[in-house]
Length: 235
Length: 294
Image 1 (cartoon, each protein chain N blue to C red):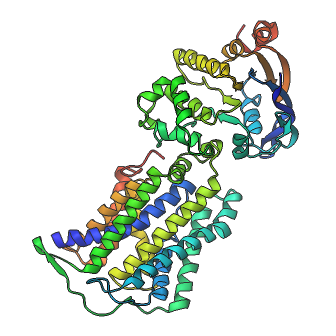
Image 2 (tube, chains in turn yellow, purple):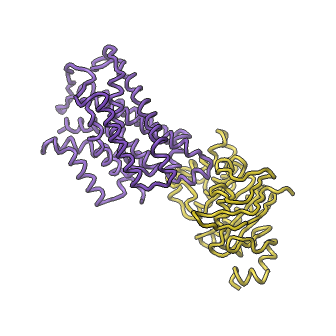
Image 3 (cartoon, helix red, strand yellow):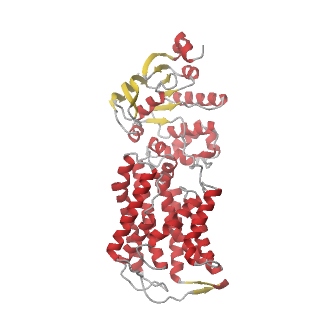
């Protein structure tokens, strides 16, 4: 297997404060990797740093083995990486269709094929493409955000807590979609508060504590590890 | 009365051009551009500088030279707006300057621009062309000069063009997306710096055009745009800041109310009407007619 993403010793944060103190991780081709950890462990900061929304203070980032340290988001998108923020992840005053068009902004004009594929994956969106995104329910918004991120056929998808503040049924639907996306060959790095669901979903997982790597194993092993269970899964 | 409504419509069309630019810039940069009125003044004077006569188009008081002068005004004010942003506002944004600092900077810019107009052309009133124009008579006692019809038509064409740009082109959609959420626009791969430049260019050229139309409607003086800033802000806030069609509706309300009010009170109170409307809307519906919650 080839490594899609390699992060090595990442240090970053906001203002004067470092949030990440040297985090390393790997995502292989076609893999789902989840990062779990308590609130404030730096999970979201990690995704923002990988995607270039935050500057790395130290550390290295490789995409397909090529140095990608310090690339801004526009460049990351061109390298086949898409990112779905946790909240405010759709353009509310744009229609579903326009949101998807923006997803393909740098992709030239031939987006018909991609639209068809994305609508195939999310049939609910195809029902009313001219509805304003701001009028959608939380679950539909999340679907649209995922669909938007898929418009450029990314090789790696970064998901920041995709199931946060959704109803339990919607959580299941979104996780199923994430699995479907992965089966089409997209590698996924997912950060989750919902640790049990995330570990069930992923191939491998990392536990992040206080901005440092704490554990790393397969999803199932972490799920059944006593320590993880005690700390993050509620016993 | 009908006459006042029609004159109000003509004024509304000028207000709309300014207010749409103001609201676009606010939408994307969350920045109240107090220099917008003075950009209109510059447009009016650039047209004065470049206007060379060129006969008459039909019954209008000016010829093709005015069309060229209008284009020159749009080009110069558009470019000037981009330049001011690069030199003044962008460095401030990069230092995370707050809303108030940026508003003060634009107020300062307004004074600089106006002073330059004073230096260049002096305080006297100026006219594009002299001579009387006969008004066309319409039913209901409406009388309109050909120049005024030209103003209305030009503004209408511009507003429709802006609408098509915003809703039918990739750049326009990217502008709306950036106004919605600049961070997400970056995430989607949109070059938001280019969007900012385009927004200033469009907002600036609309202001330039509005200035020329205002000059055709009455006359040129260095304060013309500054005085106009109140109806501009009233219109864009009335409609909901950041919303282009809100600015359009706001412009209609402000423009028509200002003219119709002269039926009962002195025209000197026109700006007060804009102010009262602004007050009323802020009390009743602070986000404006089409605004989303702030």
